[in-house]
Length: 113
Length: 112
Image (tube, rainbow over the protein chains, first blue to last red):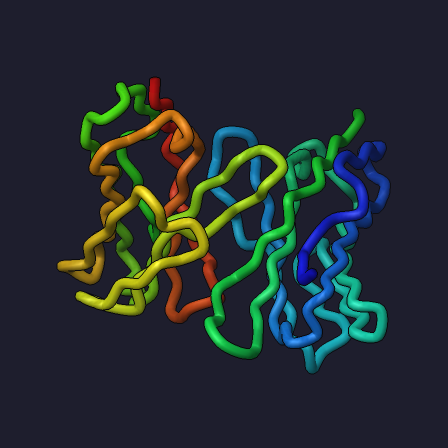
């Protein structure tokens, strides 16, 4: 079936290292993807998005890579900081029918000092 | 400051007692939606609204109602709450469907 999921439920990294959070999707009709960050006790916060006509998009300390061949999305965080500790999840937007977002279940990023 | 405001943040209620969770956005967004977040299931859309007086069911609408009388407000109504509606609820808004950029802080609801 169609799904949006994450490879790892928890990712632990050292402060200053780069983090890579992965997301697999199976709906080839999706043409828009968003990464969200959710800190404890808060609502999801938009980080970065990418459209299917792009392979890479960069923001401040974050880069999203899209590999449509293998239906894989990743979020790279450079020089990870303690404030980056949160749950990260991806969402996809289907091109056909209703364009509601489908969310993955999330990966918890733990930054070790 | 651009924001989506939900109230209350926490609510404990009893089965069958009607309740309303309010949501307000100050960005003049046309699209608003409600989600519930449950462990292992991620965010699932309950209802959405494309504009004033235009609402429709999301993926898990059973047991919920919404209204959109004004552009800024999108309340979620539970006419007769049940324990399986215990969850963390989020309201979101955006300029168009499928681009939710702003979420509220969440409402943790417990139905006993």
